[in-house]
Amino acid sequence: FQFSDEEPIRVRVLDVDALSLEELHRAFMHTLVRRRPAEVCVRVASRIASFRDRYGHHSYENMLRDCGQLFGPVHGPELLALFARCHSTISVPFMLDYTRRYGQFSKKFLAEQVEKSLRPAFFDFLRYQDKGGVRPLPLVVTKPWSLGAYTRLMSKSYLKSRLHEQLKLHGHVPKDELEQHVDVNMPVEARADEQLSAAGALRVAAPSRPSNQ
Image (cartoon, rainbow, N blue to C red; front, side):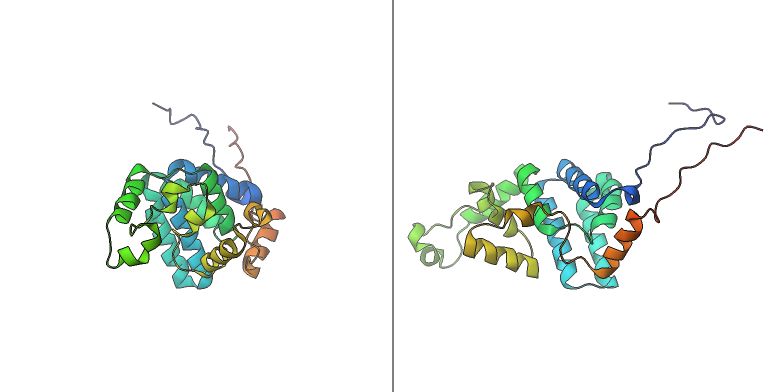
């Protein structure tokens, strides 16, 4: 393409500060499950849960660096722009449920999970005696519709323990909690920022066309 230096070029830029929280969260998850496999989506959700256990500037920098590597060089700029805007407001159970419904694991990841389960460890014949002494296949292979298959892939965090406890005691997580896209424990600073954004204080005015003189 060749553009004349004298003619203006129209470029569409998404103003993420002008989006409502629901639009922002769904846009991020829609883009994430389209661009990255399900195992990466779960790791991003897990990274947010771990960050919320240890709020701090250093933890924030580590989270941005780790998620930037997970997003990859191709889709990183697009995903990071949305992630930096919604990481403190989006609900992790909502992310897991969205990934469960619309995400897709890569073939390489599933093959690694199956191969790992087929490698016997010491005393597996005793540990899995009721299953013929063979370690069962992972839940992401046998029950990909189960939310527990996704929580098991998360790293250690308070939220993972709470979700695992709900699944163990009740067999499910309440539907309202999975559909709630906003984190119920959102920090006070994030709530104040969202109130400013909803009031239009963070919106950027559209550039005016230069007058011809």
